[in-house]
Image 1 (spheres, rainbow, N blue to C red):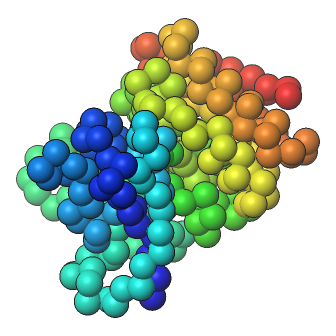
Image 2 (tube, rainbow, N blue to C red):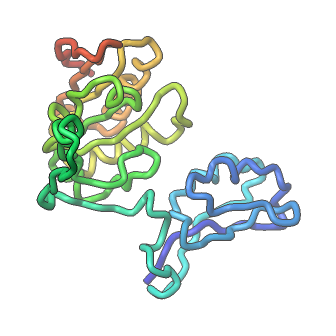
Length: 235
């Protein structure tokens, strides 16, 4: 089987270390002043590190590998391993003695993995013909309604417009919208000014995708966890 990985031209590498910090999988390290791919099985081949290289020393290549090269885990970091779990397994309730814990022990409605926007594969099967929830990082912490109201029966990506490195978000969402026939997008943001950037990213992606028939909704979570009325966004 073939796997996409990063290749580094040592003659061009100046040892700045930019690619090391931008590799979410921890596959790159500095060795003797040069960037090295030290964990091929962790490299997801997405190329987030490429844009941070000032000398164009990095590129994506395809390498023939065998299943044994991946050890006991799927090739690539488990954080980006695609799981499409439409048929959820039966939830096993808590069997301890604490009544308070058992009352709070509710099943997750998440049916996929990964969820972070940098990590998702835009062609993953779980996106096909599914409503997509673009979820701000803080909203599921602020509101207990998120799983039942948004994650249930939908696919989801999680992002923060303020703290994430958002380069590539517009293009990735546009590809999802275009190739997956997304009927509706629900943007769930917090009631703080910086979070509006997530709605802007979705709008730019919708325009880039060329879709004119997709419904986009904005849902705002208050700092008290309460939800505001839904607002449909025109584009």
